[in-house]
Length: 95
Image (cartoon, rainbow, N blue to C red; front, side):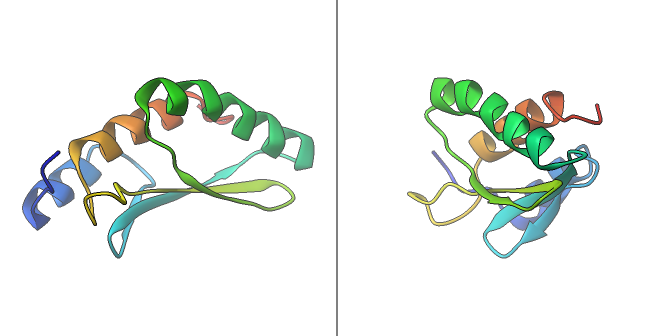
């Protein structure tokens, strides 16, 4: 899968509210209300990540989950990262 150039990354980010570039990844924090909500949100990410064969890095706090997405095998951002970000947004506890 081809790496995206900076202009394509910025264009795609502009269509994903709350997502930010973080080095060679994109990241967003999701407020889940409490620890149980955070765990349930993470559980909801398993199926779409497995189906896509693309797995985000996750940081779980009491009421917040930070999702970090990058195509590690390519060393940066690809279209697959933005496709997964859209799926994550659809599962957001605040969507």
